[in-house]
Length: 231
Image (cartoon, rainbow, N blue to C red; front, side, top):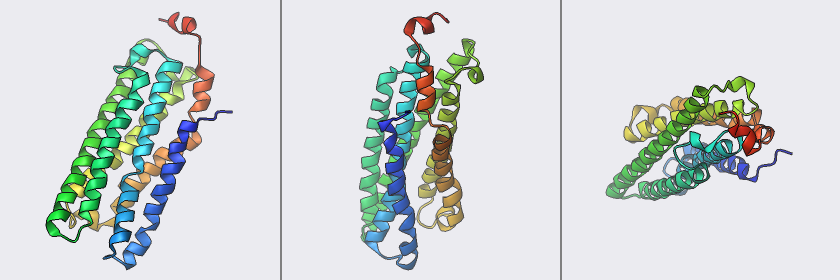
């Protein structure tokens, strides 16, 4: 059946993000509307955290069900917990910063922008650590002689790294965009928002539409004695 309730974070987050994109339409005709700005800003900044959470969960399930725990620096059962806690923390920081940024007070607006930027930087660093975790597992698996294209779970490590790279492009773009301020080049040229923010997220999600990971997880579950016999 390939059902995975933990995968619901993708469509739910995508729904909220779609609302954020839709709000760009009334924002163009009402640029001074505080409620529209807050909804548009928060609904485009925050939902992608759920996309990252999906990757955290997938990584843990991949290590436990398909290969061996020794390939992970962190206990795979705890990876999602640690990184989701990190994202929740940065989520709160970004949410608080976004709220202050919407203030009509100049001082509060600047403080909010700085807090929002700090939250994005911390989220980017946290996700970079996760990508290092995935890369280290990939290296260890290949080093031990596994040929990914010959393994039923091989596509998982590829799509995990591919989608994570797409999400990282978006994270870096957001940090640079906010770092340039309200009058920055990226913020004043909307094409970059679609190319470096929306498109990477869309590509990352579409990767899972084409290669839904649970079919590889289900096909790869092996008895422990069979797995350990290969090393």
